[in-house]
Length: 289
Image 1 (tube, rainbow, N blue to C red):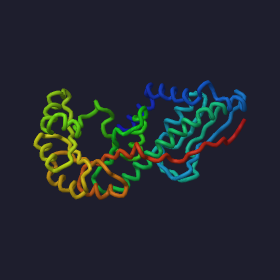
Image 2 (image 1 turned 180 degrees about the horizontal axis):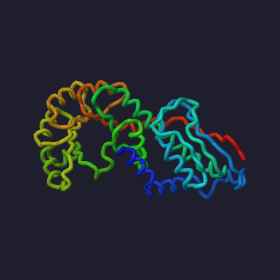
Image 3 (image 1 turned 90 degrees about the horizontal axis):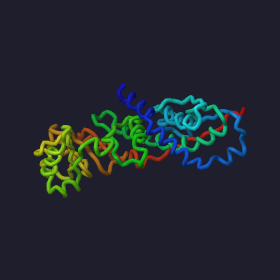
């Protein structure tokens, strides 16, 4: 229920609606010359979005209608639900309204649905790969500028969990922080002195010695960065439940189950958002009236 509320808040956010208006302006320029030449303003019709391959839908239920209705509120939309698994050839969205506006908003709606469905589909594949193991699949901040909220939404739709949304959303001490502070202990001490919200502290560790130093500093989360599965298993045994463990770096569908079997609590994967291939969706005019 909390996730549903979070999703609905996203699509009611005025910032998103303003961004979509900007995206539409970028694509339309001074107006669609081709559409204006071919279709009279009064011409109406219907169109359908068709899935051209298997996918997990994301962006179809709420975002695509918002794109079309931002351009023209008179456009009616009947979408399939996000999170639904569909086969090639399935109709995933039905539209009706002025033909000029249907075609003017087509490309933006398709671009977003294809991209987000790609993220949801890849996330679902990672979740399926670790089925039965007590581990969470998480995203990162490796997102497309301006699209982070939508991309993290697609991760949730695919069954994944969101890591911190921005730099204000969580404390994560990484290698450059440690180098600048001089040690893990010094970095942790500084953030605890500065942190007035009593937030959990996460530290990136590359060696077992760093893991021990992070434990001594009393951190709540330890990221095991670019470790082999065997070394991760040793680190998990060393931690013994005293901190949440997170695997990160070099994770793919071929090795994610082996990494999960090391006993880590969660696995963060930048590829969910920065490398997910777009899924193939097309729009076809179904009727002209």
